[in-house]
Image 1 (tube, rainbow, N blue to C red):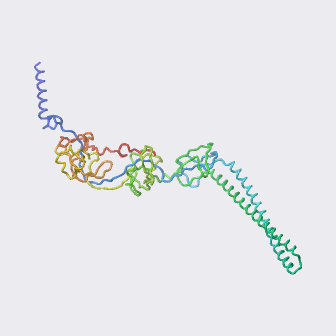
Image 2 (image 1 turned 120 degrees about the vertical axis):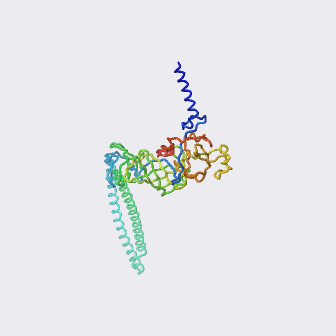
Length: 441
């Protein structure tokens, strides 16, 4: 019993000692009812910052061709598979052409008949012209005899009538020849059309490239015409030149122009980054599938021997400007109501007395959070330039973010040891802020 009482007294004395001397011993939360709040900090430093526009999108070849059926026919043979390398002019697909070949033979026969008719009309025209020359000489001869009184007026009138009839026959023959020539032109056009249709049953590669899609099988029937291409049979692309189609928001498109450099992050290749250059910005607005207004922007990539698949989702950061100044983590810049800030802060040059709120950062000074009015500048995904208010070397409080929302000037703080090894500014992911993941448009 006596030993138990002694143990209790020792525990009580030990607790009192921790209570009164814990603060001197550096034990957080003891020795004071007003314990310091644990925070993360990052030292403000001067450096470069690249301002960029972020946009989601997808990867596709710079040059790709979708081969559609230009004739309605059955697929006889598919000579390639997806992924095959092909050369320009190589036969890829063969369609049935039996009916077209029969139509071609009939058209050739019609053309031969039309050519024969034209030859006949041209021969007739030559005969009529010879008759016309004879009739003209006869009129001249009879007129001379009439003037000398050797023939009657009736004989002269008969010769002139024969001449007029012969001239009419020549005019008629000319019309017949013209009609036959028109028929021949029409026959040639029919022949050319059928030859083109037959040629369209042999689908060849329009360029050197790779087959990226095959949508037909032997035995299927494809439909289409020359004027209205129908069934898409396959796609050929040059995979040595790839681009990203980026969905640049309407609010940012004025900042983007051709020749701007860009970083591209492909979701399927998380350990690799790609660089590229803006080659085209759409002139017409497009509505994305989520309802937002966008401008499709093409960014050609520097592959450096790497191979990308068409359709991969991706994100981009298009560089629009470069800046240099004092940088702090983006989340460290807050907007606070003026009435929550110390009176002494209201006279700072960074405070606009016409506004009810002011941008501030909290810096750690001797274990106390101190609010500092700042003039924020450009930013990227992780940091922001502070044009005035703080200096390089200031210990800027960066988190936790929920704490920043409630932190006040003068609050006691203690620096988290975790912050020294894992700054919050590094928490931003390589694919951009939440909600900016790539998607297929």
